[in-house]
Length: 304
Image 1 (tube, rainbow, N blue to C red):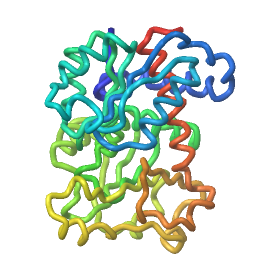
Image 2 (cartoon, rainbow, N blue to C red):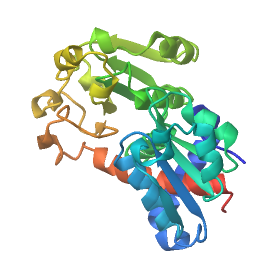
Image 3 (cartoon, one colour):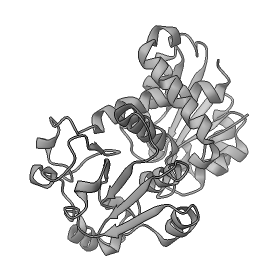
Image 4 (tube, rainbow, N blue to C red):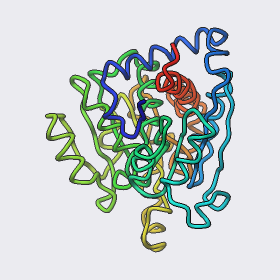
């Protein structure tokens, strides 16, 4: 039995295989409509989510399976003090696979030690979000035709952004990828990510506080929300939340085939006027996330 807690648990070949499967699902949906008939996924979401939870549920339904679970900790026995270990031991009796989101880093890992079915980490605090990374990689390959050899800019909250940390880690497996880090000093990429991933793998990277100065170099621009829930002080959040807003005028110097990504939800960091620009790929990204989760569910359940 295998779980997915961290994107690094998947080899590059496995990631490419999942993208291949997702693309086959896009082209031949009917072929997959019964692949998980009789199987159930439990979505255990101890933290609010729209896209991730619904895309897991849509993924299982489109594979012919069923869904059970909860969407907030208050509606689970966690509100009575039940431990993660006990919760997953019980839910393992009812479901074939579990997708879990939790505000505490490491909670899905603890769950995987105690569950008798595969656990998928659907986001744990500021730590990891491997299925969002799979969605990101699928979108990049679909839009650019490749992942190697690209210059990828990450803009906004790089300190607490679990999607940023996971994607940088995954991109480090590919050749000739250049990383551009764009953030206020207070929200810079943690030094351990730079040391353990970028420097350890010899990845070329630059840091700047100015989006306009580097946007012309980018093949991919990964925008992120400055997350209120990750801040210790409301005052600090309000000071930084509008630091980086992508507007039409900022795109004047960008490449014509730039791919703009965002893990969503968006607050105001991308102007809605950009939504109709062909370079805006963030809603496609949400769609590709469903197909990648379908591919992953089949892989972990051992469905051919």
